Length: 200
Ligand SMILES: Cc1cc2nc3c(=O)[nH]c(=O)nc-3n(C[C@H](O)[C@H](O)[C@H](O)COP(=O)(O)O)c2cc1C
Image 1 (cartoon, helix red, strand yellow):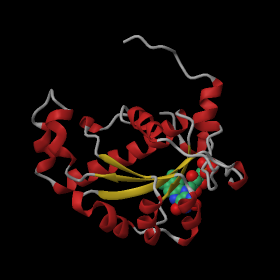
Image 2 (spheres, helix red, strand yellow; image 1 turned 90 degrees about the vertical axis):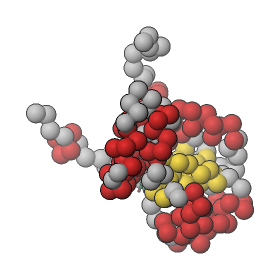
Image 3 (cartoon, helix red, strand yellow; image 1 turned 30 degrees about the vertical axis):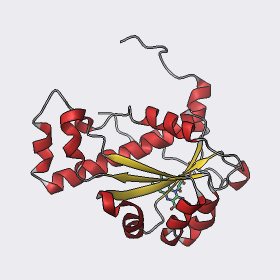
């Protein structure tokens, strides 16, 4: 495989990480559906175990869809979520393994690993679905969008309102749009290498 570049330059690293912030306020600038497709086509390439790809994404970008979400939101997340151009429900399919014959074609035994153990299936779906939610955040930044991830909401209400008929489970929410820097909190410190890492 030939790579187009060896590593990201300082500007790209800034966009993705060093300058990437969690946004709470949004410019009055819409996000076209084509941008959401562009975002998904990047994030879907992030790795998952056995390529299981358990995450499912509901992009709420109409007033009607947002109103359905409103009763599930915590007070602190209410106004900014209703104001965001798009809110993503990052969910996962606990029965993701039904698609493994297509997604992991070189091992047709893979479906059976999970079909026989609800516990293994749930752990795998949650782990990899969460990873895919993180890929969504980074991919959003890569396509020029800002994010506001949130776990402050009633998962059971979201599941009942949006996901029950599909059998999917909500994990977390991500507001998407073009951020208004006026709504940023001061950047909080991160753990330094010595506190978070060990070299063995
Ligand atoms: C999974 C997850 C859940 C979060 N839940 C909330 C939330 O419910 N409400 C909120 O205001 N911020 C929430 N945050 C935002 C974090 O507090 C924020 O990302 C963190 O402090 C880093 O901020 P920074 O990206 O601006 O440095 C959440 C972030 C993540 C990744």
